[in-house]
Length: 482
Image (cartoon, rainbow, N blue to C red; front, side, top):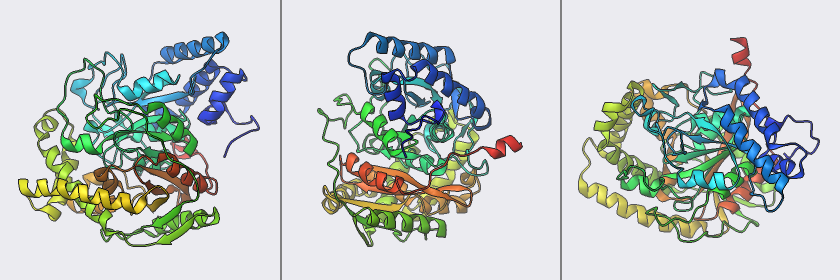
């Protein structure tokens, strides 16, 4: 995967190549920023992936990086590497709009902890990535910034809620993007756009907003399921983005006081889980799992296929715990949200009602959280320190654009298809979606799940897939034809 010829344009280099080249003065951080800004100018008008880009600030950061190189001494690991941040995450001087028009002027006075980590690592903060309003759709559109398109095919979703981040990475605007994930919002967009999406263990990356920010009483599901993660064009890009954001922080209610070890790569036992009885995998999805399993066997890992019903149970719990808490926020969503998010959530609630009934009781909710703890223990014992799961990312290829606005019946299918996206957040485990190629004009991929704090083990296995998969950039020929 690594280019050693120097023939690739700067915007098409990996984070490692860019960081090394800047340190060696093969090229400057300013030249990298200029190349990526030119790539944004070339591709973003069609995609609408980055929605708040300030070229003068980008170039100022790059100039500071070049000055640091000239001064010598220890240099941070991502010095001069362009990274985007998401519109629902605080970045000093930028709006934390959440895609809500009424909040377009809500400028952050400081960085969220994860953004501060990227800044401290030397990243050039390259702009803000688009997201659906309130970040609760698997599609990326809002009334404030408009719709983000999939760089492979505008008729299909770029994913959500970090759809802008994934589209920007796939198109070459940045090698790394920050995103967040409570139900697939990093992993699914990466899958839809053909990038790598890494969701870390809950607590590894602080979810805390900057001190002094307006307090928000975060629902329990947000505290226990939501994480900041990294989207990268390569597995190593995602790794570098994650390591920059790892942040011991006791202000976060699930934060850790120390940096835990991030795994010990070695020979791995791979358990293939293809279907948990909620949605039959599409033939293209099956083929991607087959390819990945074969490649991992060729890489020397032990591969077996088995059933794992606890993942189906966890996915159903997700639709109880998260949606019951989102219902308590509906007055604000109704007031400030757009028609798309209101319609989508309405159909999602209807789909969840088919599982839990129209009005789940408090006792069911309490039992759900109690059961969650049992399932976490069972899955951790299965995975340990040397086993990973290989699953689909979704039971379907990337969904048709705005499929969640097609009515309750289609949304029920989407909810069932997304069981791999739902089961992992409710249990708090790390996972990575990794591309396996392109089929029928759309990216395909698989998900790997590891034991808690085994991120580097996961990435070690993901690299074995990446090394054998055919990777190409989307050409955006549809945009040129239009």
